[in-house]
Length: 366
Ligand SMILES: Nc1nc2c(ncn2[C@@H]2O[C@H](COP(=O)(O)OP(=O)(O)OP(=O)(O)O)[C@@H](O)[C@H]2O)c(=O)[nH]1
Ligand SMILES: [Mg+2]
Image (cartoon, rainbow, N blue to C red; front, side, top):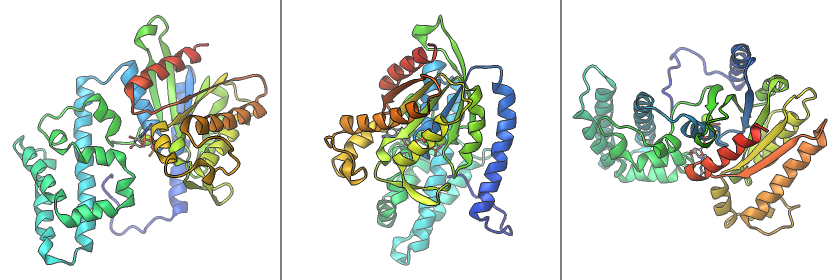
């Protein structure tokens, strides 16, 4: 959703260029990160693309210190900008496929762009502009072609954050919008920085505040292997598995093949567990998106993707099977009896996450 700032004259980078750039960035992050995290307790948070790391980090912050008013105001602006960028992309996509002049899309599009330019120019925008923009957006989204584009876009259909934001346009685009906790959890905004320092200080455990630096690592074209160097300093790992992707595949650069996402997560977990000098005492494996998993199982049987599974096609039993597979991996590579704990979560559910985070903190203190 970030605007494309690529200069017009630059060539389109290849996937290898992008990987090299990312690799160098990771080297820099590691250099910086090692300096800050060395003296502290340090917990590594791993997860595949979209597994829910950002949501998890937001839950931890909500639970530990919360977001204060300036932070919320800043996030409010980021959420508004992110919504506008998303709508711009949808409209530009619609305009490029429209050959029906009766749609009057160019007119609608230009009034939207005018309105958004007006709002993005902080020197000229006024609070009156924003309700105007909310109305313009709502009108545009009612145009049949745009509706069709949205309905036919797998990217949009898979993007629950965007759907959430589109369902709350008048509120989000209102003047002095301040995001609620749910907005913070559900809306899209800038990706979390790779190293996030969070004070775990849960209210019932104030007597045991836990300073932990959470290093958030995404399974990303094999480059995450670099992060494994840090594991000898980690107290623990938190490993997020996106259960709802049991029927999907992702590219695995090590073996140059498409791999089932849960199997890819197992492979990554196995590499982590096999790091010889790993000093961490415990692994926490969170099987996230349990809600989506349960819903999807009613449409796509688990055995379609895991033919070796002999249990019931039911969320708790199928998740238990995944849990056992991870436990086995953990034990196989254990140089000593380490500790593994697992939870199934819906990380959008604040009440459930409060309980889970409290249990995790208690666990990490053991
Ligand atoms: N239904 C449901 N949605 C979830 C859950 N956890 C996260 N999501 C949604 O899944 C999407 C991806 O979550 P993120 O927290 O952004 O995942 P991420 O691991 O940070 O993703 P990347 O940084 O892009 O790799 C967002 O739209 C979340 O709102 C969950 O437990 N249940
Ligand atoms: Mg993220």
